[in-house]
Image (cartoon, rainbow, N blue to C red; front, side, top):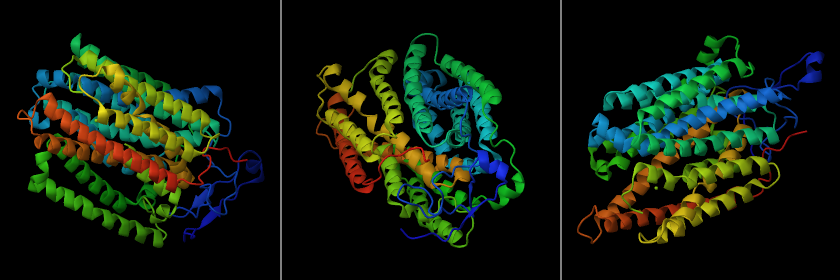
Length: 524
């Protein structure tokens, strides 16, 4: 593997410090140092960890970190499930216009994805703990505001700000985990718990959304989430380790250590791309509109601009938000492509019944994360994610052949149960790989990169599968295009597309992750 021009210097430490804490790697700029096959920087000792890392966190610290990280990310997913199921009721009460009906769902992911790189970079300078606490309190406030919204515009705006609030938390959570736990089983379980909190939260959101919509009202879901989030903020404020709370020369470092131009280019491209795909997901006819086409073309054109800019920054030894040298690492590139690709019965049922039918997916997702966290350091990572993708492919195949008259338990249940296994098994492996290739002082940025790639994949996947389903339904020979028969033709085509994508992802992992071995193994 070719060596990067980025130099590595070992910071000197007094003898008294060296007894208890190994030296940290100081990397000039954000360019990644040359990597060995096990993803450690070349010339870096196997035992080198971040100077800020707690070697042996107490049980109390471990519990608080896990609970706070899991709960805040879980509440974000809970709200997603709540809005998914409760949207019809919200639309009726707030009189949401048809042309913005999906925006309470879409706007959250849009604003979150567009601010992850920025806030991840800022967190590495300001400190992950203060950024995390800021995100917690903002999420509490905007979640409560969603529950108090009196118009559709208010709901959409508050959901947009809530998406920005969670962008404070997600990258910082990754940095908190890597700073608190050394490489090994504890860190693996921490990442798995963070991933597992999302499907658990989503399942609770689906359940509560259905129950509240049909009983006391959807607003109570937001009120309860805000209360829980505030409690987590209080626990975090007093319990999270103050590893990086006091950062020297913050304003100077904000000006010199962050690739502001690269962030603006990348975030602008992502914002326009996500917005275009959100419009296409809402209505496939939007792709013919000049404004949508213009944004789509500009967003794609900004991608090579971004690549040229970060390449220039890296060559000059200046900060680059995502250095081009990272993509030379086959494992990192494969993982990112896999995350992008991995991340859709026609019945008239109540909100509660809908919630029940969704439950197998988050349950299996939580189990997949838990198992992956326990075995990540014991089994080869490529075998684990390939097995997970195979299960997802089987789930997609079952939905391809399902018939409307079949009972839910005959085909839909195993399909829904198997579907998330691949993505959730990949979650832990991806976090371990991506945080390994980024320097120790840019771990929040690493978390931002992971979540950004996932958001892009989610936007593209929803839009493309929606276009396929809508176009096939439109071409159906059934006269009534809104009938279950016509809709099933489109859905079936979309599931065949998803099945093909899952198979392609499996082949990618077989080729790109060969020889990766085990990840999350403690370095002695």
